[in-house]
Image (cartoon, rainbow, N blue to C red; front, side, top):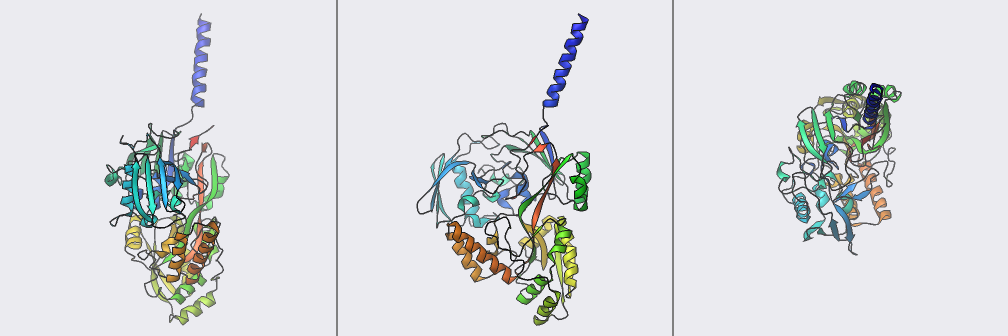
Length: 493
């Protein structure tokens, strides 16, 4: 009898061990470099907001997928009128917000009307400018009528700035976000981490993770020990410099090099002297040695750009030759502009490594032609306040990660302070054109105008350097939109 009990006990233990071995982990710690200023995607420009919340906590009528495609989200389907101006959305039923309130057509109307209102704080208010009216047909149907046809409307509705919020919780989303997504907001330890937990009442396919923690790791050097110790299991996008080769050789990790929508630029205050002088901007453009900047700022992995457009886009034009690296020409242009002896200016650098490291190289390059830059490191919140909002800067470096965002150059209150009627005409034609071939040609025209005007120092497309545990699957290789979508993420053996 003792023998049988021993065998039975051993069998039970083996079964338990086997079950434990088969049970995949359901928690994940992701490292992100920047802490969001708040948690409401509809009320802020910082990419870090969407990187935590997009597709995880908040959802829109549509969503942008991993390949940049437009997919159904809270709208399960839609029809478009023959004149391209009326979109009728059929909404999913049985959907609830995380606080238990029902999602319906009233929430869609509230969200779209709020985003396009005169007093809207939405950072991408232009996305909603074509909307004329939003009508509730019934609880599961919304009719949106546009002032004019807009070829990008469904794509625009997939941005993080267009997510649907509830009237009951809209004003408190900055600290306690309430969405309809597969994860619920759990906790925000300011300066340390943001934690999400699985939404058991999600309308769609359940996620594999029970818990996801976004840990703030602003220092790229700290990412390596965090990975090696297992304290952080995934960095969706991280700069680790020379240590990349070491990590690539370690079988415990996957290193995935992808693309982003991040046009990394030397942003220029175009209405502030002497940068309001085209020849000064052209001189700067001729001075920039993109290869040296890319080597320092992105481990040599960035793709050179000559205008504000992603090389991954079919309408991309390589304009890097518009102002080739030519110090003699740069000095000549500065002399023609009246600055034979150069001048002094400031360069405000936000925390990301691409900005801080790239800024040092650019400052050294511009010194060659007599432009003496005072480097001023600023925290992200200060950058948003001083540079982006108040336009209190000469030069800065930042990566614009919003998808297909060349239209920002047509916004009169945007921090570049750029104004060109010819560019505005091209944008207006784009807004009214849905034919793909015509849109491609217009995009090419727009890129060339920006390149010729040397509006900014166009540097490189930010690479997406993803590093994560080899047993983690489902994280995006590329970033067609600023997001860390966890809906398909899971642990595997």
